[in-house]
Length: 257
Length: 313
Image 1: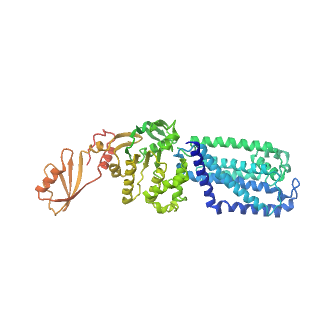
Image 2: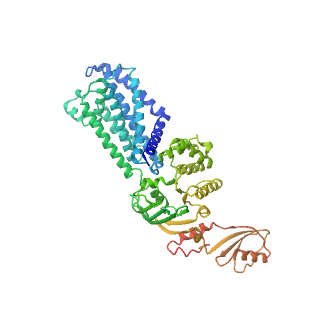
Image 3: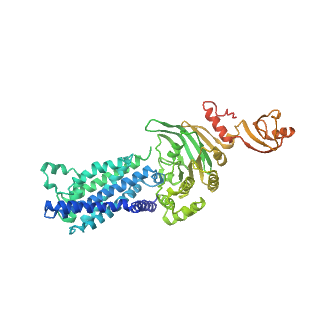
């Protein structure tokens, strides 16, 4: 396939993936909006008033970036893991496997769906947050970059999960037992400076901490982590996961007996 | 040029199942080729390897002279696959399934829409183009998969039991469509359990069993190996007893029906002459069973012996 043909193929997969989650918006777009509103009401309004300020910001304002990024992470991941696994489950992935599509086009096609959903849900979460908080964005470029890079990273992670998954249980285990704890312990609801030193050091192993803090910086201008270090780690993870996912496609893990 | 050339193809699955032990196949360009074998013989594994859905263990596969190991994308560009199981997203509209499939081959939406219209109309699915695939009947789903496989105009079309579960009327219309595609130059490889289908459509045939090729020849050559054909004869009038038909073995089914064996050294006209002499008039007749089916069953029963020593009854 020449390059224009490859771009046509990429556009086809990306459009298909986009239409897939838009078609079922009640399952994909609405629940995160409701969940994020509940987080603001419970953690921000009810509990947050008892907590006081963090880094000079009201607790409600402090948790806004983390909650938005949490929505981005979970939705970018969920979109790709469910879409790619469903394609395997129904064997419709064979439509792509029998075609001359290069593996990287298949991967980018699925990832673009996850990124699109991550951005749409993240934007909705931002709009919802405006009803509860009066935040001003400190750096649009950092905010947008973290927004997109985090979507890409977790879309890739979702793809790898789906490649290995053999049942629908397998695509819920990672989000439930790995992703959610990492998000909750990644500084969404607190600053790691509030932790004892030992747990601060343990927290530094959590990659989500770097994304949440880079996003904190983009919106609030404060971060527990150096922003450059955060970007290096995020981009490093993207590169590693991208090549790992390509390798899985090349070998045919979970796809070709 | 050969459309397909397979040499010593072997496949052992991770669970240890040795599905292919050495399949050799040659399919000429423009051929309508039957790939037959009992369940579990390895037909779908062979097709899966050709279509890049299964990784081979060893052996060589060439499609139009291109090796699938070194020119995989080029090979896939020339193959259209109609798999045994439905493998489309049932929650997508019929038209979108075809247009997306074309997109995977780099065909733009405008061109894909035109092609989808052509094939949907030819396969009598045009009225269903906006319906979700899950709403189609079994026969319609089979035709949808044929239309999908043709969207990129492949030179080699592989059909893995395309008419399974389809009623006879639709099956025959599908045969007609496939004959037209073959006449236009598309090489077709067909696997089927309806041996009447293979006999009616295909020029050449290969039979695989237990992962090896046990036969590859022209359909005519294979059918000539039938040493005996059994005919059912429907009579104009009632008869009371089996007539004396000299060299022909004749059995009485009921008062108006006879069953007669005609071996390779005899001819059917001689049987009619003999029956006429007995005052028996035949109004119609048919083969008791499909000829290829007779051969196939015999070959499966005699697979330890010489495949040329096929005597059927």
